[in-house]
Amino acid sequence: MTREVLAAFAVGVLAPLTGCGSSAGNSNCGAAGQVCCTGSICNSGLTCGSGTCEAATSSSICSADNWCWQNPLPAGNYLNSVWEGGASDVWAVGAFGTIVHWNGSFWASLTSGTQKNLNSVWGSRTSDVWAVGDSGTIVHWNGSAWTSSTSGTANFLAGVWGAGASDIWAVGKSGTILHWNGSSWSSATTGTNHLYGVWGSGASDVWAVGAAGTILHWDGGAWSSSKSGTANDLSGVWGSGASDVWAVGGAGTILHWNGSVWSSSTSGATSDLYGVWGIGPSGVWAVGVSGTAVHWDGGTWSSSTSGTTNNLYGVQGSGVNDVWAAGDFGTVLHWNGSGWSDPTSVTTSSLSAVWGSGPNDVWAVGDPLAILHGGGAAWSISVSEGMAALLDVWGSGPSDVWAVGEPFLAHWDGGSWSASGSPVTAVLLGVWASGVSDVWAVGFAPGDTPVILHWDGGTWSTPASSATNDLYGVWGSGASDVWAVGAAGTILHWNGTAWSSSTSGTTSDLYRVWGIGPSGVWAVGAAGTILHFDGGNWSNSPSGTVNNLYGVWGSGVSDVWAVGDSGTILHWDGGAWTNSASGTANSLYGVWGSGASDVWAVGVSGTILHRGSR
Image (tube, rainbow, N blue to C red; front, top):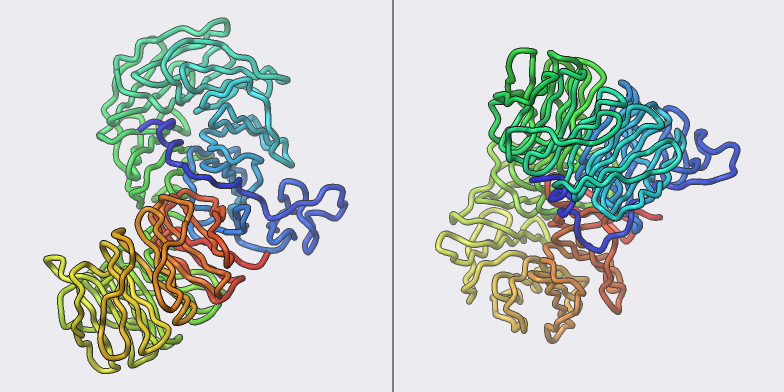
């Protein structure tokens, strides 16, 4: 997969990411307790939160509709490139205009001014940093703010590098090559394949690499082709000098330039490699698909355990004990000389559901073995030995929480999690409770047999139903008013005595159900399906999306949220569903809140978003 393909992951109608707040013309801006300066900038040791500068370990990246990242931090959007000007000056850029900065203590977000994907970053010094991206986007950091720079092209830009502040190159789609002379960008048409990476040892020794083994060289006067000996795409290039240059690409390809010719080097990797960087001739790193990381010690390439299965797209550092790698879902890894670690994520497991008893007691569960606890404090992992994939969570209070999964039932008693025996072997996808002695779980058994379980406070039983399809979600307004939904538009109702079928009017799969009361119930499902029950009948409610919707929750009749594929978040205001800018393309599987100003959404690769009061 190329960087251009990577950019295609970021789809959907989403608004640009915004900083926490800014104020121009305020002489006190940036100080503790004062408004943030333009560009969401605060003094050293402070970060921008809710428009003012405050002490923190990281600043939140929030969408235009105030959905803010809680995990991974600083954000969970794809990070496509990393550049390090020093141990306390590291930049990473990525999807939706994401720009984050490491100051030696924590990562903080900065406003890029664009929602376009940013694919590469490079700087000549702390106050001169460039990032390039989709649709010819180029932005520049002058030490205080990021501003747009006119590129003169609408082509995708994949790489940027310079020999100095007035000698910078950017490369991209269809052989696009741009040059910055200190005042403006100009183009140099090459007519070659797409170009994905650029690097040089100096003003008259610059290399560009790209699709189908393309390698170009700039000698100070003209670009010329250089034989690579491979037809694989080349995504990254770096060298320690004019006669020691490395290029990496598809199927584990690693090429080396010795000053005269390119030759193949055995990497030991078979996965695509996207980024390469080194501290010198005997210390080079290459990263790629599924967390691949390989290291060159001057004689051989060897594999290094990165600790992630996410794709890694960029790598750079300031020394042998200080190397950063960035990639999918906001992955940021650090090498300290002996191993890679992720200092930013509580988990990278996909999270399926979220529920809480209040704003300071929130649970999220997922796959594999993920039970997280958070809310008012930082999120942390709640250890649960032997637990399998967990798909839903619900409780009657802080000391009575149930999690269900594949195949598993687990209970939290306020102090620890323990397994609860099930009378059947089944995959359980939904759970709901009205109290400690009234808990329902639904799912399916082998052979796609629908399963309904009930807990009476002492044992689980299997009440009969007329269901023939798998069941995915369950919710009720009370012990005698419970709904279950499932495949092919299945809706069942429990009246306190028996389950009966209810006409849904759809054949679409329904994944979750929730309501404000007996006459205000919502069900969501495949291809944007949303149904509403008014106390008498179910009817279709136009959602405005064709994306699958996996979760629904609300604080009242005019405040309901639904979440789904590609970062979809919809809001019901009492009259219609409208899109809410999530700021991510990550699929979202669950939503819950303690109130209108405290809403959580969770999803793929550990995604946790929070929407508080503005």
